[in-house]
Amino acid sequence: MLICDLKIRDLSAYIQVMKQIRPLITALFITSLGALPLSAQDAEEDEGRSLMEEGARLFLEGIQREMGPALDDLRGMTEEMEPALRQFIEEMGPALSELMAKVGDLSAYHAPEVLPNGDIIIRRKTPQEIEPLPEGEVEL
Image (cartoon, rainbow, N blue to C red; front, side, top):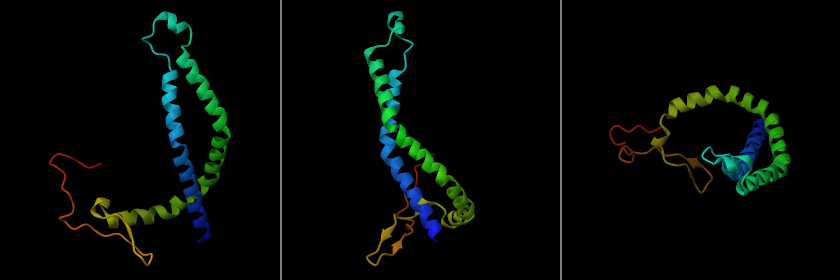
């Protein structure tokens, strides 16, 4: 039980780190698009970088320098967690598949509720509560 709890905490920590750096990764991606040379530029602009491109390049280099150690730590943590996650998937994969086969469509259930005594319940929706999709549409 202790090993499983440790794995779940490590996974939770990894997820929290990923949630925190997601906006940064998005910003890096967006700014990197501005650094790409556009084919519609005239020959004069192709020879040198524009101020925007140079600023974006410097910004990205600064971000890389600042985030380098954190990303290295994250890479190390994922490498440490990989064997534990693989073992978890190997052990729990069949049980989770069996559970999903029993549960079926998750949209047929309400969101989980925590009762005052700490119990967690998940109620099945009644047929009247399940919204039928308009004809021809498929929920993915």
